Structures are given as structure tokens and as C-alpha cells.
Amino acid sequence: MSRSPASAPSLGDGPTMVAASPAEASVGTQALIAGHERSQLVRKLRVSLTSHCNLSCFFCHNEGQGELKRAAVGLSPSDYGRIGRAAVAAGVGELKLTGGEPTLFRRDDATILDVVRSLSEARQKVQPLGISMTTNGVTLEKMAERLADAGLDRVTVSLPSLRDDMFKSVARVTTSRSLPSVVLRGLDAARQAGLTPLKVNTVLMGRPGSGGWSNVHEVAHIARVLREACVSEWRLYTLLDHDGFADHDRWYRYWTDGLLHEVLAQLGVANAHEVESLFDRVSDTSQRSAYPKLALELDVDGLRVVIEALESGRPVSSSFSDEGPYALRLSASGQLTGVLGGQSGSVDLMPLLKTHHAAGDRALASAFRTAQEYLMPDALGVGI
Image (cartoon, rainbow, N blue to C red; front, side, top):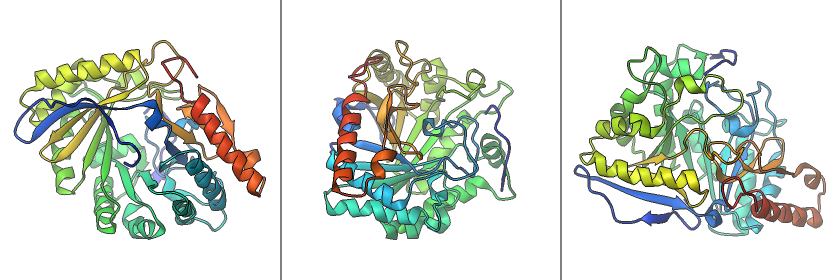
């Protein structure tokens, strides 16, 4: 499989229920607003193992690390183990492995399996500690069982389309394999390995009938396939604007621009007007405040569908990315940040990792507490 050159295109406290009374839709469908407060978000750590990927999706923000690289860059498994123990000591209860594509991590002879084993040792210090992974699913079929044996709890898989031509266009790759089939086999392997509950992310883009690519019309089909694959949660996103995404405006469409209405129609939601009113509350609050971080949750015949209100230009009063505060982030080069792209600043863990004794471990834990206090903004455009 070859990539085309770059060009345009839970554990812890659980969610805070902001509006607990459901809005009834078609049979088997409910809607509510759920959110996470700042105190919950600082207990999450996204760990980028590498900036390398075997796909080159045109909208990828690469965890704020800049352009995807063909050479893997990463810390050692022992480094990640020390970081995991320091994070746990600072109160982190959920570790999410990301990339690039995390399954491609290489450091000398070490692989992601060594990283997961090293991070799993932090469970000796505290329970519960969740270790999950976000992946494009291309290598999951052959790695799922070994990842589970190493200590991984669950996976979230990205699925842009069930159309092979659309998938390959988005991912900018050339291969004779059907990529949707590869990913679905990976999901099945993850289910059999116990990497559950299974979650899937899909970025919706384009406008049907506009003459360009669009995956919006696939919502009903994808939902049906995910239910058959025993997926528990399907998260729907709009495109995030970021440096290097020159074609954002061409592909971008926000939920209130008719997109939510189309999605609800495809999902068979009967009282779409009431659900859209709920989402208006989510979107309005998200524009004005960083916390709680809100999303619209639908229960559609047993499949939880989560719609995040990340409007382009949000927050308008700051230089933060559209995503806003989401979790602490560790880059593959050892930089700890609180917002995608590091606009709120960063803490460099590399010098601390060179100190191999108890004092170094205490300094790492202190660095995490500093990041939790100062790098996660307490309001839109305002750091603590």
C-alpha cells in the first residue's frame, strides 16, 4: 500500500449529564446532552506514540504534531512506563494511545506491544486505569489478540466511508485491498479479542450533489453495519480547521447547516425538531464556555451515536483550535500540552526522562500536576 504525497484533503468519573430527561424519537431512540467538566478532562491523557502513519487522510491534524512523517519518532517503552506511572500519581485514570498510527510504533526492536506492557505496570499502583487506543484499523486484524494479551482494554477505530473509492480518496493511498473490508475485519478481531466496548469515529464531510466527495449519504448504511459488528458507540465529527488543512472551507459543513437534519433523517429519528433543539443548546453553550465539554448523545436501536459540537472558529475569542480543551496530550517527542496544537503552552518531559532515579520520577509527577493546573484553560481563551 502506497501513500500519495500530502495535499488538500470510560473510566474515571464518567460524563456529567447536563439534561438528563430524554427526548423520545422513533422506537428505540433517545437523545440527551452529556458533558465532561474540567476536573474529568484533566484525568485523561492522550499519548502519541509516533507521528508516522500508513494512511494520509487529508483532514488529519496528527494530534497537533504537524505533517505526518515517514520515519517513526518515539520515546522508549520504558520512557512511556515512567510517564504512565507519573501520570497516575497525578490522578490520571485514562490513557489513550494515538499517533499517527500507534500500531506502527518502532524503537530499536520494540513495538507497541512493549509500550502497552510497560504502561500496564502502572496498574500495580492504582485501579482503575484504562488503556485504550485510537487506530485506523488497517493492522488491527493481525494485532488485536496480541494487544489484548499485552494489556490493552479497548479500541476506537476511524472509518471515513464504506465505499472503497471514497475511503482511498480520503486516505490518499493506492492498494488493491478493500480498505473498508480491512477495517471491518479489524473490528471483528478486536471484538473477539475482548477489546470492548468497540467505538468508531467518522468525520462527515462534503455536500451530497455538490460535485465533490461526500460521505453524508452513507450514515444509515454505516449505522446498520456498525450495529451488526457489535459496535457500542459511533462518534460523528465535523472537520477541524488546523494549520496545513488548506481545503478546509471546501469540505467543511457544520451541523446547523442542514447536516444534523440529514443525519437524523437517515437514522430514522422521528422527532428531529426536538433533537435539533437539544443540539442548539449544546452548540450555543460550547461557543460561550469551555466547560462542561458538551455533546449530543442518541440511542438509536442500541447504538450510541455521539455528535460533538466543534464549530469552525470555536472558540472565537482565542487562538485555540476548534476542538478546545479535550485532554492532556503527550507528543511523540515528549511535549506535554493541554490543547491541540499547544496554543496554551507545553511542558518538555525529555530532560526529566534523562534522570533515572526516584527524584526524576517525582519531577515527572510534578510536571503532570503543573500541566493539569496551567495547560488546561479554565475558560475560552483564558488559561489558569
